[in-house]
Figure: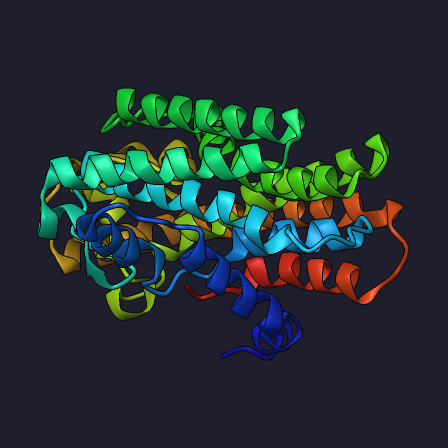
Length: 326
């Protein structure tokens, strides 16, 4: 474990423990099957980053209530719902190092439990009695659906542009991070200026987080990553390291890369060749550099807040986003 990650976890240990309790207490399944499938995705090693960001955003905004952990479950239930659905759409085999839920319980059950978790997130949002929070959650679900549809429509297309990639990850990831941080500010009733600052922090952090996540597909093994290495490509998803390299490659190298990508059953050796091509054309370096810019923007967004331990923790989370290995 990196020193930075260790420091963050030490600071938020009690928050994470309370979030875990809230997730279990507020799940309220009606059938054992719901409990089994929801538990499979919810309690299989997730980082709880999204609910933690809401709690910290509320705290830096001066929230003094006792429902922040309960309200934070909105975003973990929502996230888990999308993972259940995404794994089915993507025909994935592993999630967090475990077989995907639909491979164990079947597609219909996985879809329906995903629907249940989405409904649960909306029910908890309603408990805030804040129309603004409910609007944020509905906006997230709409954007995430748009991102998935866009990605599905362009699945396997080798001419996917960087602009399209950015639009997809904004919808799929950044808007969720943004809404999480914004909701923390909303339940605290902080000023519009500080609400926007936290929204900007979350949005930029989400972009950087997804870029680093996409980088990990080309730098980690299955035991570290929790999913099959090269899974994005095998699912027909082109991410920034590949998009940038294809655009920069010579005609000969581009043809080589395209032939590997088109073969969804590419070998480990083929994948290693592809990584060499990506590095030859600075695909990973470019992606890391861009992610660094978004982290800097995220940190700049917090400048309106006075220095505090919570602010320092949020800054540390932004820094860790760039260095995480899983």
